[in-house]
Image (tube, rainbow, N blue to C red; front, side, top):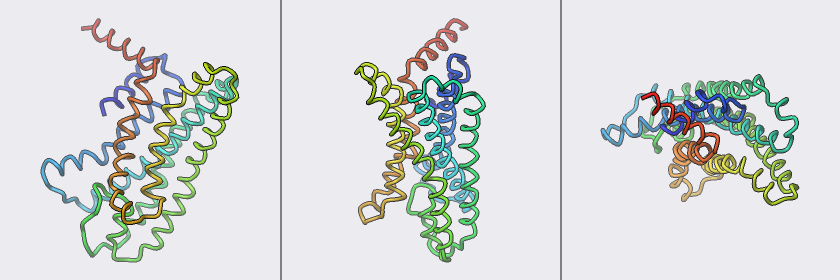
Length: 274
């Protein structure tokens, strides 16, 4: 939380960071802050108070915000990979193509699509009948554990979730995959090893976060479940609900020299003012 909030403050305060890349990065930090806040405070409260009960409406609220923010993160990561594609593969056209208006459209579109899609799925989930066991085999209200508790037919809801996931979840993944395929192809064509290293360093951290995020999501939601994977499902869920927001400020941001300079400048300003 502290790392992501620090990134938001630095991007907003330092005019040197008012560029498309850092604007998208600030949005990612904001999204991760909200993302963590939907799951972990409630879970930590359960650890401290031993109270593991949760109101049904609270469960659906958590489901709505978690799903909306997770979908928004997919699109935001795709937007950031497209930004890196333009910077590396089309550097002469970067300033023209990635202008302020287009950058705002990418960021706002990610948030809007995420919550719009999840509004539909959550609406259908709330119309299921729950009359059997009321124990969720998970540490938060996710789609699959809730579907398993329903005593009504979930076929239509599962089909809807599958179609929406294919339409709106597969697109940002493919866009990210295509962007990095073009980036890697361009980097390999750079004649000097120094140039290749410099170009790769601009996107290596983002690639690490994308691999971690999509890798765990694919294991949890796409790979067919055997007995061992069912047992490890909650472990893998920790990766994209906690580990990705945790490593983003450190792997992707605080190692960046522009962020470091902005942080030093802010610290000197605060010390000088006091």
